[in-house]
Image (spheres, rainbow, N blue to C red):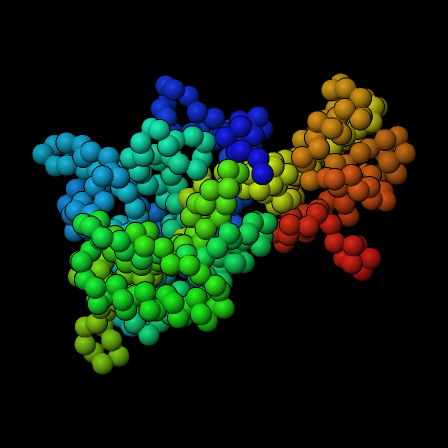
Amino acid sequence: MHDHRKLGRELELFDTDPLVGAGLPFWLPAGAAVRHALEEYIRELECRAGYQHVYSPVLGKRELYEISGHWAHYRADMYPPMDMGGEQVVLRPSLCPHHAVIYRSRGRSYRELPLRLAEIGGQHRAELSGVLGGLSRVRAMQLNDAHIFCALDQVAGEALAALRMIGRAYQALGIEPARYRLSLPGPGEKYVDDPNVWQRSADMLIEVLASAGLPYEAGAGEAAFYGPKIDVQVADSADREVTLSTIQIDFYGPARFGLHYIGADGGKHRPVIVHRSIVGSMERAVGHLIEVHGGAFPGWLAPVQLAVLPVTIGESPQAAAFAGLAEERGLRVQIAGADRGSLGSRIRDTRLVPYQAIIGEREAAAGQVALRLRGGRQLPALHVPSAIAKIAAQVGGHSTELWDDADLMAS
Ligand SMILES: [Zn+2]
């Protein structure tokens, strides 16, 4: 596996600058394209699963985090508060409190449950500078987060559905879990003290893992401060495990924020919150993708999806026209013109690009392109519209395969 810190810089995906600060990477255009594709995919996946997206600010009053319990149990990982006109505000360490406030911004009925609020939003962690590097340990991150507010009898079904979404996303991303961990509390004040509630949540998560048929290992001292969680662990380039995805069951937050809904019986009931993240933070997810794929991303994620290579200057107009049509279809395209060296060297320079379209004199005259897939496979010449349509279909289906021969024969 590749080290994303080195490869990510070589491929100009992200970088850091001492003037911005340690643990505060910025995304360069190629990395931003990958992240954007990932965010779009996640939003679409969530929309289709009945989630609603919200936006909320990266700051909140200190009081908000006193109510959520972060101030008492998680302060060591938070930035110090800022004084603002007689109040104190803090950079948020998680999105949960904002979403709890959104839930209670009006009355809720059992008919609205499960209410699934999702956001790809910023949060901050006061990491020590010694552990920072690349995208996996950062001080500011964009989390793929969601909170499902539901009735007790809906919890297991929602958690299981989230676990299945994780599996589906991993398939599209071409990544594999190293193992599933049931993260339980350890000793000390980091955890809310209510053994019955911990046991109840842990039992529910064990049931979810059992119905998904997934083996797991228990990890003491790895829970969130308010509840146990299922962590999906992946291995990094140094064979260390990091957590990418999580599912948590929380009885504590709803009580702290006084959340309720009106049940079918007309009475007030307390919802449960299922916290879940499908791919974790954008930083950690893309860092992992760089390591797993060595920069050769699945077509739908690639910063440049299609390289257009005119054999000589003579085919430049056809190359520009082809690139323009592909861009109109939403593909990310780069023209590697004849002024940039021999065809062989341009093929090598664009070797990480999933599709290379070569246009020589013969193709130009026939309105065709010769497609070459990453890895070297050459396809018979295709007419321009069908080449673009096939690439767009393959990429639009979030496939990790670059070509579908069955599809080609059928059309
Ligand atoms: Zn949460």
